[in-house]
Length: 433
Image (cartoon, rainbow, N blue to C red; front, side, top):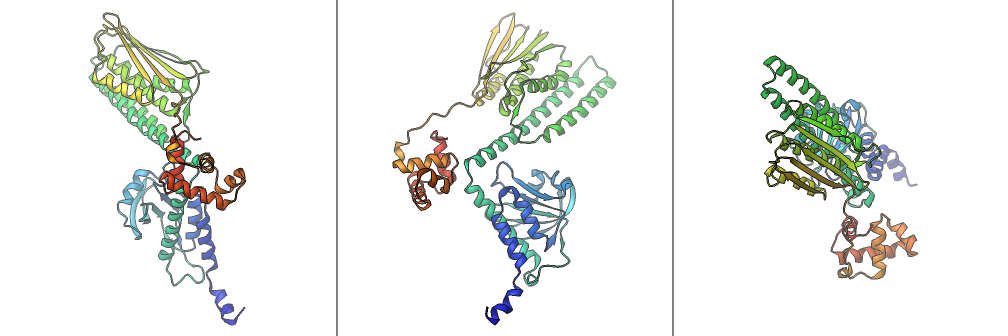
């Protein structure tokens, strides 16, 4: 080692370089904790939150105080993001985790991803060799590195990650829709109690207060449900329907009978359970508006492939299949590939049957001849679509990784795509799995 090299070596910021290496190699699942560890020698914080729409399934990546990261909401992060300029540190007070806190925030210009540090304070001492750069400058650099890493990992993610991410997104949408429906049911129930001629003012206030308190508890419970619960036992789904509807029907003077599904019935996918409750809820509200309805019978059954719903009333048979309410319910049924039939009998009421399939329709394989792929390229695409990386493709086909890369480049040209993710998506649309 030369004298100049020996003089230079001790002054290198080895700790910072190790943190840079850790962030650059961090997996998505641990990138928040890795970034927080890297930042702490320069700026300490009670919690670190990353908000990124690159990861549709898990847009929040968090580390630190559980009392903060367990309560922070997307609405809070969305609001804060509108205040922060691209690649410019923002400091101030912001609502995070349900209360106003001191915050340092940075936004990554290329993706709009947001970094939030709560209760930030400069570290009392910093690693040797980092004083000249300044803590904010180093934190900004580490954040850009992490945000770029997230983009890179998502763009090159295997199908299993993408499927999980999309499933989590669908579950969040379902929970939000359930919240909206439950709000609607609560408001309808409150209005029914207030309009009821059978209750005096004191009884109406007591009933509304009791219903509102229970509804708030139910809404919070639903909002806290974890997004990885993609299926629901059929009896649980039916029980939730019954509990949702009982307060509403109590003020309608209609006897509502609930016929339980079999306890061993197949679990319902989340979107099917939600659609089933929404459709039955809509049907009961429509039927309750008809004259001379004294009884409604609601029954669920399961044949292993479909959820079978039957709703029957004893009214005059004046429910119109062409009514706007029924048309909207038809659309909800069709959205999950189901079907609904209405048999209206004048003087005898209406009999409504709904069939909701539990499995998505099979995607027919498309003709891929138009892509003009050679046999080897087709084999590489099949392996890509099933989640293999270059190394395992090379082993499966007994070729080198360089040859795999050659075939992948040709695939990109012929499919007119720019990434593995796009190529895999096209393969899945053509029936490859």
